[in-house]
Length: 116
Image (cartoon, rainbow, N blue to C red; front, side, top):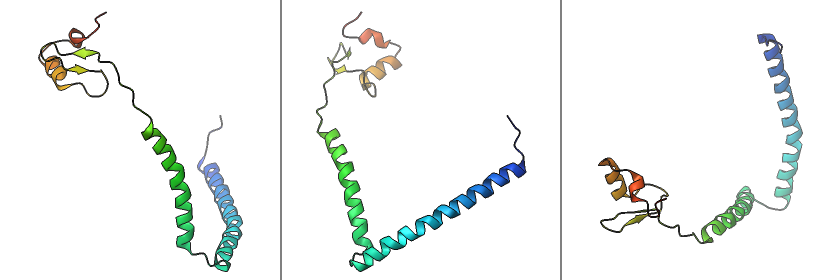
């Protein structure tokens, strides 16, 4: 692997800057064409924004809706408090009663429902 020097890095930077300028010059005529089309059809910038946001919003909302409308599955309880009968599935934050018992020195395995 060749050792990079400051000069070679600077040459690469200059080449990339030239490439960026060329790409910007190529983009400018397309943007002019879009602006001219919008003006000739009396379309405002706000209408374009609304149309673009509407398309984006529809795509997002369908994925969000489908994720929300999916039924959540009940998970069988893994831990049970022998005193109160409260249960915890083992997902998310531990139940308060379990956290308090662990703090008191008990082990979580003592509260397993189906001990192995």
